Figure (cartoon, rainbow, N blue to C red):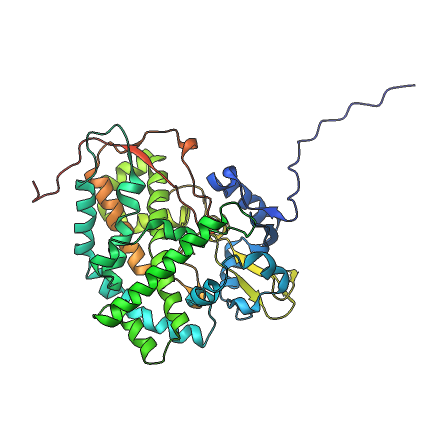
Length: 429
């Protein structure tokens, strides 16, 4: 019997995406972009699973993301979540869940509209631009305090974790005696820690400490009111415009969401510049490029990797997929910002990119109210670091950087660097 003619070996094909797609693990957190590219190519929406066991529907493409973020059918209030979602996603215990989770991110109009109106003036572009010189002083002082003779310094501890909180305290009117007592560890309460997790007791202890601190802030601003945002929020509560739970929740959101994302964005920006020495050198030589560079760095690697939950009130079609009512819908801002149909050569850092706005701050009615402040913080932070720290470099291999395990956020937990002697700014020293 004759043998069959040999056939050409076909190219190996990539395995199909699992259902649901797991969104966790050190490799995923280190570099989620290859997975996001596969998901975009396969379609605009996929079922995913998080470390806590929560399943959700993840939207990945730029056009689909923009439409989802502006879709009036999708609401943010947790009351919309179904029992299946609630069984695993309501991680924060009572009474804290009811007392700290009714902030802007979890509200729909008209309540969202009224609450947002209370904070917009504090973060208005003209107001925060007028504070730029003060922010520059803060950044310079932190660089002055960095250990110039150390073999390695953690840029997170020395600068990235401290600068955004100092700025936030100034902007919202958190008095120095309370600002000094804020513990960064309290920010970890937004990371899911399930009831069976061995770290649950420590999580609940941090939550109670933070709630106690918020109570002190409210009491202090009621006793000695000023003209800052915190005092105005307490006044709005006393006037009946906010419930006590809404007041505490808004302060919770300001203290946690108001500074940690900027910390993370500083780290991702520095890492991406250190990976591309030619871009870093150009930005150092042409500081007038900084505003555009900040936009491109946020597009390339956003600290807000995923949005928070959204829910449909009834079963409906979403980008060609039937999504049950009360299931959580999440948008990947990072995946949308690297969509090649919107941004040519999306994995490149292009300081001259002119393809229009990114989605790093979201879109629609929940667009980040602190976007103007964050932009100025990043411009000041990066300008100061590049201008004052020549020879800035990593002291560990890139692949050993510890990326935070947070579900929604992206950044490094530490950033070990070395640098040549800090340069004194003109007029100092």
